[in-house]
Length: 101
Image (cartoon, rainbow, N blue to C red; front, side):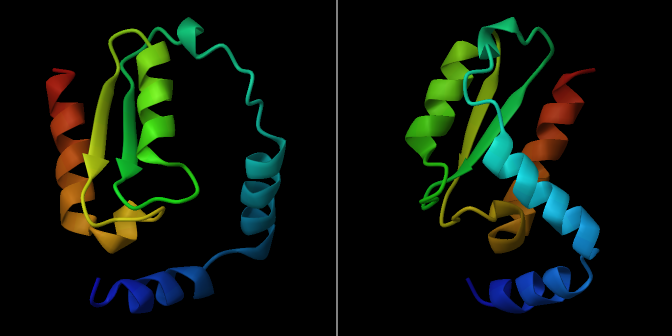
């Protein structure tokens, strides 16, 4: 997507090193066995249609385990849908928040 690389690079250069390390650690150490069925709050699961790290199929599986959750697949986006398709991502999140009343 035009401009996505530049936005990604700009965002990465402003990251705090400690925060980034914590994010990477959390990704590696996440509890993949967490009982998603126990989530009882409104939940939005977002996936990029071209995401090769967390595929839309995985997102659909996760959403299927969370009662009442919403799943949105953002077209023409990979793992960084908020950067690759910022308008679609923002519209998706804002619509979800508005639906909460």
